[in-house]
Length: 334
Image (cartoon, rainbow, N blue to C red; front, side, top):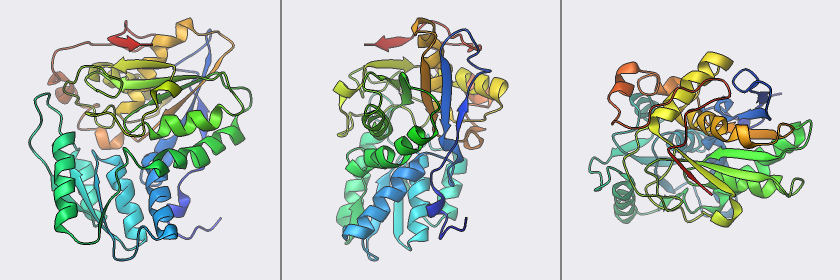
């Protein structure tokens, strides 16, 4: 099939069974490989849906200067969509953004602003958002995409990701396990999948130090998981369970996934591996569990796959994630 652009290639990612990492006995675990999107992450979906929806309804025009705060993947996805549609884009990042992501953003033509002042808890989000507000005041025609509040964020997964999953499933789905940051992915999927599966058990995988679900704030070093503020999109009543994962558990999950399944994925994928291993022993054996692997791991070779970087992580929970096992919970919530 011939596509009109790389943005038109977003989606249609495969489902795979993670039977080596999670062998019998126990529930079957399947994963949507969102890391196979064109720019390497599931953020391609929301970026394309937001930009093309805005162009269609006139909220984005050829003169619009897009601005967003991003730790990497959403920024890269927006930079790709902006390049295809000939739009200016500024991405506000922080020191945790990987060097590879910074180079990718620059090569895609994005203007990159790096904030350097963390808050008292070691987070940068508030500082990034202040810089976004300043840029919007300074530049006429600017539009803050605001993935934490943009309704098209979850709608992209409701109409796209969720529809693909339903088309590819071979038997009923019982449990959905998704890493969270803006909460757009988990809400879009839960809303779509609970149509045919109304008793679906929805599990959010958050980071230790994230405040999304009311936990105490703290430093987080694995990009793309958790948040330093509650997203406006959050609808906590639609989520049945929260499992919080430490940086070291996420690292262990990434390495286990590469070792058992040959899948080199990013830090949030390692977090869901750790979370599923934690909850799987108490789930019925005939259940089918679905997760999402959000991004590729090659951009994290200097972080979660680098022994020296891992050794510099603050002291905390360590974990060795074996197939179907994980050390006890750092934080779990109901």
